[in-house]
Amino acid sequence: MQFLLSMLPARLTRRIIHGAALVRHAHTLGVRVIVRDAAGYVLLVRHTYLPGWYLPGGGVDVGETLSEAAAREIFEETGIRARGEPVLLGLYHNRETTRRDHVALFELPDWDPPTRSPVPNAEIAEARFFAPDQLPPDITSATARRLDELAGRMARSALW
Image: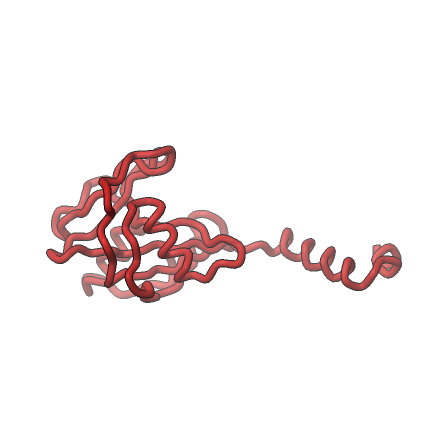
């Protein structure tokens, strides 16, 4: 293999080696965003393809910063526009998905409401604000843990 690589231009060789390393050692990176209204209610979404209620969020696209991904995902899923930069609260290791998945948790303190009611689509079945003491019974355990950590009801964890 080394012989074959040595016959290729250096730039192509670097790309092949980098690509192979990426396949062997790929990491996934996602974002979740906490959005609260003036009354302190927290925004959750229900997906069409997964059970339970989640904090809005999703994957980070190539060439995108974490905060750009957070603002994009919140807009795509709910129609809410970030007025300022989302605030990074923590970076978590998500062992539930793979051993190489990480989630960046943000809070969006300053935002503009949607100009129209969010319409359910192929990804999001529903988006709704919930009172902190009246969260839905099928909220995901990771979402409930993050909210409990932020409320001081449990110690912060490095695991999602």
